[in-house]
Length: 122
Image (cartoon, rainbow, N blue to C red; front, side, top):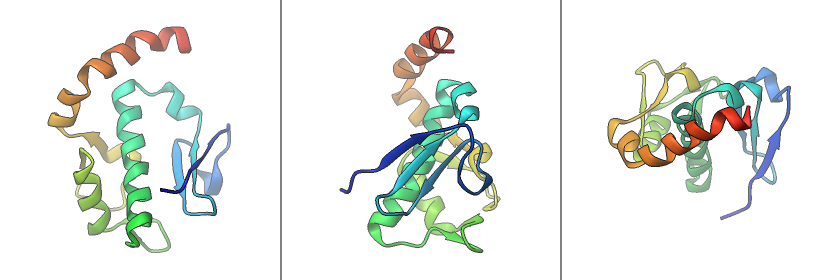
């Protein structure tokens, strides 16, 4: 798998304020200030959301429509494979991405540890 560049900045590409995966060369994962303020469960959901985009790219699957503005059924399927539950509204971005109950349970101890550490990180 190709390495992904991680950028952490105050202003993201194309007006994104939370996180965004871009299929550039090399691929880029951008994380913004809203991500840092989210709780650990939400951060994990966002990272899984962006990972689903990366998996789609690796598999050669188009996972968005309307020039990348909407998630399609392929994205919903791949996101589900990675433990996300998505709102049926394909327009929704990170706000609608939540951890499936089994995913939350499987990652529960890590989520709790991150939540406990977050005051020290903030």
